[in-house]
Amino acid sequence: MAISPIQPSHHAAILRNNAQFVHWLSPLDDMALSALLGHADYAQQLYAGEAALIAYDGNGPYRHKNVDWLSARLENYIYIDRVVIGASAQGQGAGRALYADLETTARARGHTHVACEVNTQPDNPGSHAFHRALGFDPIGDVERPNSVSVRYYVRKLP
Image (cartoon, rainbow, N blue to C red; front, side, top):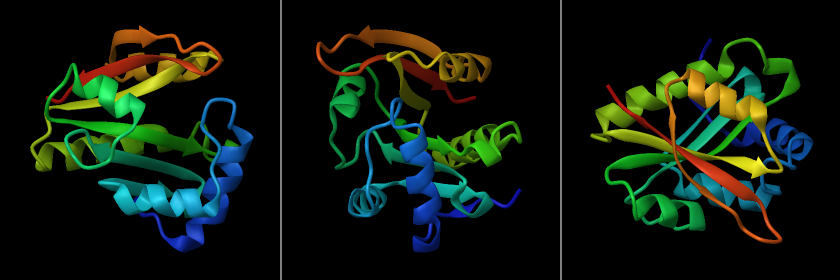
């Protein structure tokens, strides 16, 4: 598996897969994806964009309600904003490989934690199980009326 930076040639696959799983992810078009990537501290992919992970330094300039919630509780973390694994890449270890690579990068940059959120409404049981299996612990739930509700997870880096 060759993990490499997300390039413009990968955008179509990422956008197609994001649309397939948009009920668990926020909508995304090419302009919004480019903006996310412009702020990302980690943006890597596998299989020509069929699997991708985008993350931000929790102490960096990128602000979002999830980053703000986590920053009130954590220091020195990297925030996983978006993981998109298309059907053709599922079950091949792509998610685990991207998370392992992110953790290596995060440790090298001095981060002590990796954090993310997973939907509880609409619920994403596969993602909850995946994160628990990787050693992520839940640190809080936020219910947002008329919106997506989430559970926040954190993993202390070894």
